[in-house]
Image 1: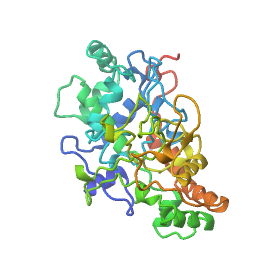
Image 2: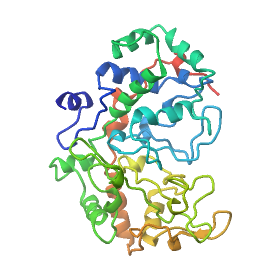
Image 3: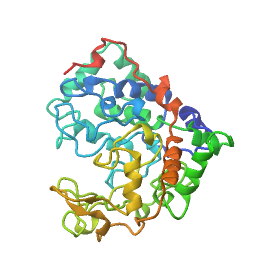
Image 4: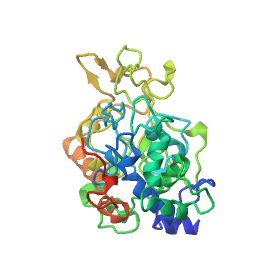
Length: 364
């Protein structure tokens, strides 16, 4: 555990991630993963990399309502930030069977409905050959996987990418410094916002509590079992009066009672990554607070019309509450205090490829 903490540069106030036995951390694997994360050659047409939808300046999210894949197809869910992603017990917005990054990464790499990076059995050898014939990659893969074949594999790619994303640890926001004992790190307004955020009336911490501002959290001291995986219907939609969400994305399993169930994301660096919700439908933090203050969202017209406040599937935690302008401003100020400038600019997370390198891809 001590070696894991050293490799991930974890400060004392952060717990230790659970690292799978089949993919132990190493600095060589993390650095290989960083190069792959920014390499457009992993996509079928060399126009997109993982970093296209997960950009450092936005907390490794993006600033689009919905992202697009390398062939231009729209992805149906908003890009989530990757700050401290390895502390999630489940991955993606609404999937209770994706439990590790190695398997989750296969979705953007190989998914075909919609296409993200577009790796398929038909083009796999071509994409792998791009890396195999690169002047640097064979040596890097050998260093990262010294006991394995010298031929680069998709499995090695996903394990290296998973190691890099585990390395994306955010722990130096004003909130973190306050947690470490610096009572001046948060302003008086932000401290009032934190009190409201954690208090019974606003109730934000019921879903967004803990060191990562989400109850969807596990670490070596507190692994989460399947029965406790948290997913919630928050009354964002109610298309048919029976709790239905959009036809293209009903949520967790597609079963009638599971409509609208989504995982509460971490709020780390949340202020730099609008728009919000699983479909990017709320443009800013003020709109998000309005949604929760009202106990749901009302859409008066159009194909998505409905009163989310009245959804029979809405979580009982989503109840209207009173909040004046000053209180709302304080909570927003607290959420802005979750921004970690070090994380957003750390060169250890940044694009390592020089300009005009083939890894920078083909421009549209």
